[in-house]
Image (cartoon, rainbow, N blue to C red; front, side):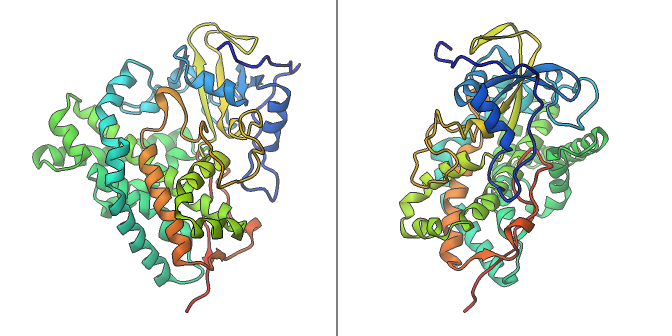
Length: 407
């Protein structure tokens, strides 16, 4: 950590900036940029009264994400958003890898890593293309005024994660609402508990079925060939299912929204298919829909000239880090030709998104195909009326009505 920037002092503890500037649906809350400009590491007062930290600079956030002296365990962290649980958070449910540290996390990650390699995900490209084409047809059948989230963005990753895991897509109504509740900042502890129980009950039925009738899919393989207990199988299955349903769906929808803001970008994407991978990485950087995470120091850590004491939580603003001008020139510009190497849209360190390669395939296929099929695609309502997911742990849009010229 020798290259960490020396921080300048903020005299009073800050709170996590949450208010986004009206008319700027793609930018992080303005207060984050101001704090980052003053200091990449500031004292922060958490809603429960805890005095911890807020990291906004790219190198600072990256350093914390990659340092094993910071824990991801829920029961050690303080919740950074208002309206959260009163008192300590409960430990992560069995199988929830985001709330684990090594060596427990390492055990699960090793079991799953081979199923999400670059090669394995590229082998799924043709299937992603088929699913995308089917939902472009569905979008056309619904016609102008369709909600892109419901008809296109949500089904594609849902079908892919269901097929990969071996979850019947026809059961989606049983688990999609539970996953949505778990992502909501406004959900009460009771609602979160009920959603987790509902998801686990569904997955327990599925694991039991695969134990008696083996299947050729990821969950079936884990049932047959791993040493996971039934509780662990249920937990990891529910975790992967919930994670695969929401994040990529929001990137497809919010990425579409961002591209529609400038038709020149769409034309560039249509004119040069090779631009798509760069566009996906830049959209991940620019939008950073998984915007905030928290780590807690297990021991005293010197960082940027400050001492983070054992037990202090650090809120990591990934969206502020991905707009850091010290790492990305003109960071507030969406530049599809930018090589956005090093962005933190998928996280960093041992908890970097397990499904990132699948997400890349889905986005690289779905976004160009959408604009090729509907070159006149545009918003169906004014941009300022698009309902934003400011109440969710994963940012994006709740709905995206679109229209196009028929015939």
